[in-house]
Image 1 (tube, rainbow, N blue to C red):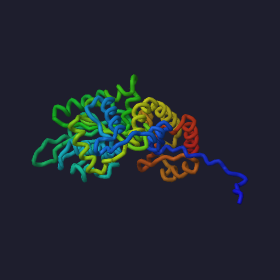
Image 2 (cartoon, one colour):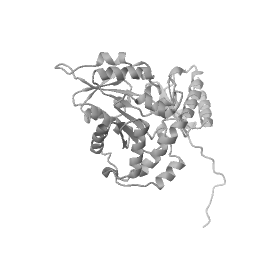
Image 3 (cartoon, rainbow, N blue to C red):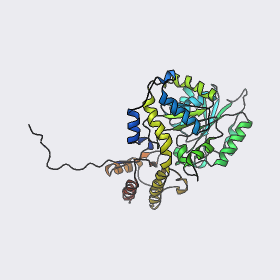
Image 4 (cartoon, rainbow, N blue to C red):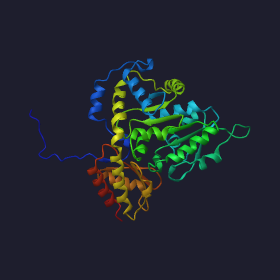
Length: 358
């Protein structure tokens, strides 16, 4: 029988998805590289594409070694385990990813307590950290690690300035305290500074014992993050990766995309920052929201609704073709990324403005 087609097929436009930069799709170049990737067994250390990715990540961050892990959460949790002993405390900002979004793994895997410290715009300084450092003794858990996040996701993608980092590194070193960076979006932070983005990333991370950064957010790889550090740290990290179920086999298929993500995608992140600024400035014109424009520094926009319920606002936007996330009782988040064009950004700004009309 001949195929019966409807007389009219309405065009279905894809949603403008601003929920997260984890939603980025691998580029055509990445898909082609994945299809032709040279692979081996990575648990045996024999996957050549994984080995190239790890070597390149270590080189770019001026470190001795690097480790490919399936997720940023795994990379962070391996680092926490590397630097601490059970019964110690980890100092971090009160909105940090390791506290809110990593399923209490610091407690279950490392046996550590999170010492959460609130800081304006999510930026911890030494003045915030020093009062909550405790030495080994008979009355309190000792501090084992300081953990920072740059950019600070739930503070709106804010960037910690280099002088603040340098003071923390220097003071922590005096006390023999290691410092780990959750640099999931470190290239976004590096893109806010003048000059070469890779050199900026090295500078912003030079004083940390270990650094985790994601390939699968704004850099568009389908899977994966990197942990960089010393040879000794990464040798132990491989053991902890295996313990967490992260020992993969022919993972070079993923590393092939990761190499392109690492080499090419940081160079375009300023485009996402420009788009987030368009959205933020449009929102700031509405009397129905509260927004800190100075905190919109990278690709994340967080604002509070003064009267509307976030669930209702999000549902209305969804019917209009824009997807966003709730991140607080009255707060919502927008995240720009590779798959959101300037044209889509302007369209989203119009839809948001309309939805905010009283």
